Amino acid sequence: MQRKNFTEVAEFIFLGFSILGNHQITLFVVFLTTYIFTLTGNIIVVNVICIDRHLHTPMYFFLSMLSSSEMVYTLVIIPRMLSDLIFYNQPISLGSCATQMFFFVTLATNNCFLLTVMGYDRYVAICKPLRYTVLMNKGVCARLVCGSFGTGLAMAVLHVTAMFNLPFCGTVVDHFFCDIYPVMKLSCIDTTINEIINYGVSSFVIIVPVVLVFTSYILIISSILKIPSAEGRKKTFATCASHLTVVVVHYGCAAIAYLKPKSENAIEKDLLLSVTYTIITPLLNPVVYSLRNKEVKDALRRAVGRNIS
Image 1 (cartoon, rainbow, N blue to C red):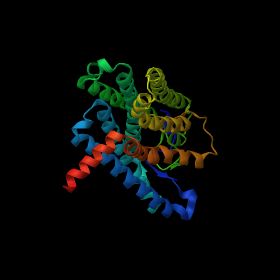
Image 2: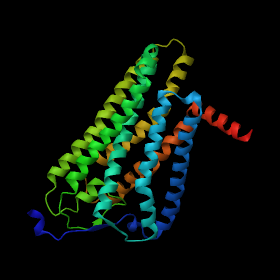
Image 3: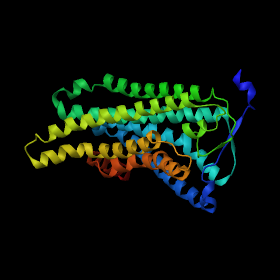
Image 4: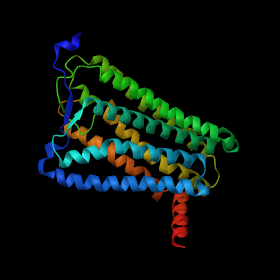
């Protein structure tokens, strides 16, 4: 009954980067270049893992799943953002906005838990090496991946259902995609319940994986310190360095974006954070794993060598 008191909003318009005025064309070129590198890098990582039998291990299976998820994740957001940088004030329907938010939440949550799964894989490999093939068999790996994706789906259904049952009065989204808080601000009614849901889900999706990952690394480091030779310790830790780098950046940006108190005067800062976790972080994954991981670099050399010969 409450909805009848409000004019029904059928579409939104993204404010995006309009506050930067004439710099939008420059941003378009920068973001398009970054997006091309992101797609190319993740496609290379997935293909190399698929074709090189040396990488047919749980660790690289999870990496290929993460890269695939990152590709779809960027596909949900960046093409529309690039379009809005060139063609201003393009409307997006409520249905399209809900769809974008659904896939964004699903894939962002999936990525968080896949990184957790990768941390668990490193823990088993280093702390329980004799039982690794048993504990990380194909069935377990498949269930862990499905569990990550299923958790993402559940969080997305919860968010989108709660959000799009709200009546909206505003039509201008202070963002470049249908993120949770900017859309919530357009509601005509009190959104305290939605804010509680948002904070509860964000806390679960960020804090639980962070606790699990860092618990894994505490146990990993304690095992590494027991290795007698310095070379052995260095080699063992090198297998974790790439994952740890991605984890710190990924969870750090997510925590600042979704767990900090919201301010009405922080639009520029929120945009910068959003650019980091929607554009920079997906690029970081293939770059870090290509440049810092010896096995991936060797696999790339073998793949290039086969193509040249």
